[in-house]
Image: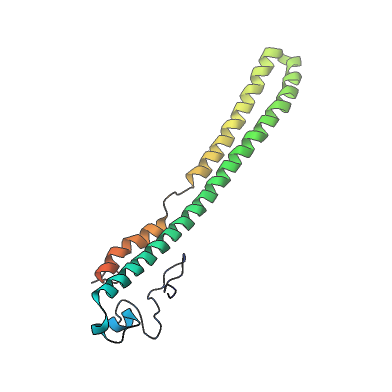
Length: 167
């Protein structure tokens, strides 16, 4: 079995390279079949097998591309989640120690209950700002594998024998 003419998960070349031929969509049938000298020698079963194999290879490559794109987007999601998790931990530690210190300091000026309320409002504002930053990071995530969708849109034209959208 020979290697597919396309790279596994990368971009696709404009025309596939065939051993000993020019390749591409306008190649003679003998070049497309590759191992047959005359079209008359190629049986319908062999042609169907070649097409099936090529479609199978194409689908595997498209799945690999989709996997790579989704992995990249998952990485962005992980960074956003990490930022939110870190903000939550840092916020809880800050709330714990600074709240106690601030509450104690303010209690000498306005009383214990008012100082506790003031401290709670301050940390509520900090939490809202951190939540807005994390939310913005999640909005940057694009769960659609756009390159894969674009290449999948070209498959029907390729099966019809069209190149670049022109017959």
